[in-house]
Length: 232
Ligand code: NAP
Image 1 (cartoon, protein in one colour):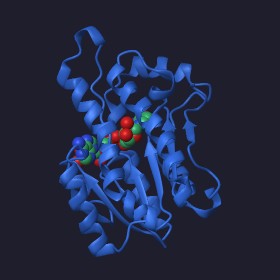
Image 2 (cartoon, rainbow, N blue to C red):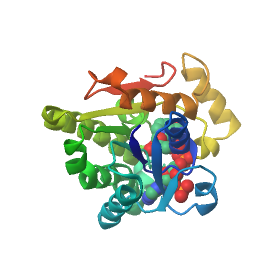
Image 3 (cartoon, rainbow, N blue to C red):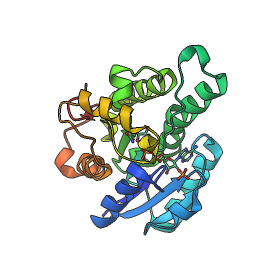
Image 4 (cartoon, helix red, strand yellow):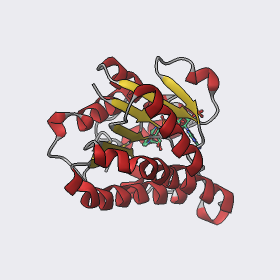
């Protein structure tokens, strides 16, 4: 049994990850931004914490370890999108997305890395197909997610000698609150571009995360597992 910390575990993919790890018998803690109603729905320790805040990341790591024990697995999942064409993009929309998706991933990994080195731990970063192929209207989001891929590959090389594995999952279109605002027409066009013709599920991503954290994946590090129905 491992102790698992998931950022952004109150909804969507993060919540499915919390449920899969908990269902597999692991002790799970998760963070969320502000959605307390959603946070109360899952059976795991919940911490309100903005991933952009490094001091708060250090405090959450200390609190989780004091209550559940040393953390073995970190899943950096918290993420946002603020889409717009670059020529209309507010600098705040750029900064908010980079700070949440990329700096948030740094913050929790940095806060935990010494512990993960002591315990041969595992890091799983949720990136996106948008960071692999680039998506129009998402220069901020694509840059943040491509940054997460670079971070994953560099860190995997850096900490492999300590027995720490670092991998990423790049989902394509997954039905969650993040994609709920896409209208029917745009949705149809999007599905038409996906060779498998349909969106994926949060559960599929979550099961891949459980696999990457398991002993079955002991020889896998520095990889990006793309789960996009063939889109990329
Ligand atoms: P979602 O349903 O919008 O959930 C986002 C989660 O992140 C929530 O738990 C939210 O907390 C948390 N969060 C947002 N900003 C935060 C902050 N500043 N500090 C702490 N937590 C924060 O999104 P999702 O679709 O599940 O996406 C999860 C991850 O998968 C993201 O990294 C996303 O980029 C990635 N992804 C999603 C898709 C997709 O199609 N859905 C595709 C590829 C990659 P609250 O509930 O408190 O707001």
